[in-house]
Image (tube, rainbow, N blue to C red; front, side):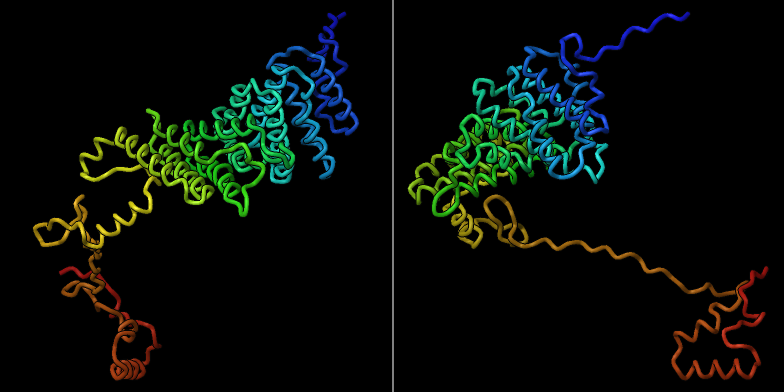
Length: 422
């Protein structure tokens, strides 16, 4: 008689949860999945703490519960239900739940086929909306929510899930706006959005992700601030001039890579222009102040480069209209102070106004003629010579072939190329 097997209990059976097994979440039966999701919601609301391993295994089942969902209305309802599942749970359980969602999506992202991709994109959008809502309610835990968003955007776990980061960057601002439900975006959610976006620009080495963030977050914010006749009410708590100064100071920090610094300086200049348009031209003093700060910060980081090139170095996007007029007058000839040895006028910085012609290299022509001399037959067959001979010579050749009795296009035995020893 064999030894009795130990009873296999569910993952959370020790906690008194009426959930038979996480596999019930991935069942092909709709009612079994719905019952398992309701049981999980009750367990999360009553549990004071849970481990990361437990939630990762439960999220494995939740992923396949959403995988098996059919029909658009069922998918939308289940996505909303899964995103709001930990609403009544303690704060630490909430953050761990969202963190395990990010880890699971990054792990499974590459295996999602094209037929199920749209509904998982919907699931990501619902989670971002609920995350911003939770961040607005739990204002003292901004760093925890920022870590979850950074894990989603920077994506150091699985490089194959870059598409997930790009999609999140595209809908980040729209999700924060939708979470506010046509009200001004709360200051906590707006701060989380901007801080996470700037930190992602500093940390990532993917310029495509930086471009997605600029279009999806900062360009969208600038368009809403520049709306006529009044800015969008969703950005009531945002000051464009303060944001411009913060972006400028962030780009001037030591250790920032050149591409990220350039992107931050360009964004700072863009919001500086938005602030000037909002004040109706009264913000000229602030613009000059930001230009001076940009020049001093750029001199700090690029002093050696400026000394080598003997010209002023400004951050990207920091030039004002006055600077552009001055530069235009210099190029038109007002600051041409010296000439080179050939008499070509040059600017002060040593840049010539005469364009440098491009060097064109021609490949040598191939000699297509057959070698002539003893040991070789006819250099070119008669049929091929007709293509290059004048009409009169071609007629003579045809007449000679006709009198010889050979078919046109055929060579005689003596015209074949032979190797003859001399």
